[in-house]
Image (tube, rainbow, N blue to C red):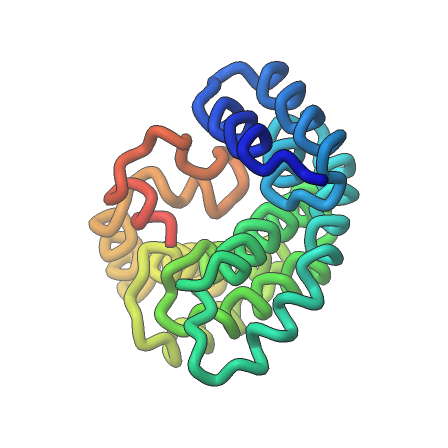
Length: 214
């Protein structure tokens, strides 16, 4: 029988530590008690150093959640992102998508980005950031501009992707110049993230800083 109280204590400790080795130790202790604990698998992936290792762990987590996600989607009254299962699933997909991107698996990362967006029509997750990041990496600049034109929300991710794509397609013309200024006004650090030179916001980032990356 699972000791859920002890598992919760270990997870709380893992979430609160800044020591990745300690996080890994605590996550593994949880998994010894419950090998299908998705939160522990996410923490284990977060503590991992290499993207290929993260991918294996996160794909296992996704498989564990698959049946519950299917049931959630069948419930027309349920809000996907407000449900614990839905939130966990998105957390897994976001990490898995960026891990695939880091490994150069752009097609898989793009597929995951599209799935995230299907569950997140309001753009509350990093799905759109991942989507534009992958399109830029694949040099699909015309598609970036087409998607930006259809995008109802002028998110920082869209604005920066549009600026980068415009510059690469047309050079420094008036349109690209304006797109660049619009993008920098939305968040000057984001281009480095979109181009893969920096990571996602740290866990202690403010809500506004985190929202800038959506």
